[in-house]
Length: 335
Ligand code: SAM
Ligand code: SF4
Image (cartoon, rainbow, N blue to C red; front, side, top):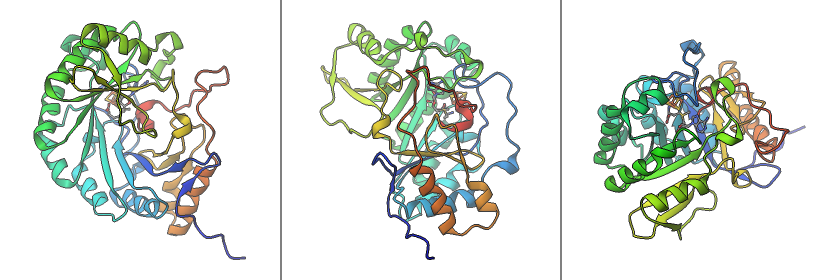
């Protein structure tokens, strides 16, 4: 019997079309954010990581199924040697329309221009505070000044907008919201707050520690200027965008907990060791590396991707008693 023809789009049983692939290039990181990683971690041996050739092959196959948007993440993607080379190889794949990077920014300053020249066009830098001492508390490392200079170097290299991601944790980051807002306005950056999610080391997450998007909006409105929903929202984007009514810029709120966006999810994720995850909170994975290393055909790899997406669940259950925290922590998934 002939196998069924492959689809041209990745559609799950809820009708969601997937065009967005997030690729983790390493589980290693040069800092230790308290909401993401434990202080000491057993990292993957290097031979477990997908090679650039393997990543490139998977992306080529994925583009035949409609994947056209790639984001490189980690761990900290800039600690992976020769990352700009991977960017240029992915940018050369005909179906790839858009490549982005999420980074902690520590190593960004000397690399920003090279990344731009390699074809990277979107950049998100994570920064939770404008207070250098608090930066050290939150990341258990130094590097605040490097992040700031990395953000400014990205702007100079041509990234527009540079997005700044801040995790919002109740009892921890309220005082950082307004200073971050001011910094973003001063430099024309797009600030995005991400509600704290249960993917942390040590199981510290609880619902009461989520600083909700609505609370962040109130802090910004009273400390800086009122905001109104942006007129040009992308309904499929995870962030809900707001514009300062005084024209001072845009703020995005990623309300994963208080307003889950699962029903418009268009993402799949590939971990650094080649496990395909159809949800950030997935409890099952597909071993793409095994297929790549066992000589599977492109057709077999494509079918594994189609099958993974087809089996995607309706959404995470964070707000219910049914929620089961995945074993993997954020840094080993690729946020
Ligand atoms: N190292 C890079 C960085 O920090 O940007 C990329 C990987 S990091 C896992 C990706 C994003 O996930 C960062 O913006 C980080 O702040 C966010 N993140 C990590 N742990 C989180 C958590 N428990 N809840 C919400 N966001 C989290
Ligand atoms: Fe590293 Fe990013 Fe996790 Fe912070 S959030 S520990 S920078 S991977």
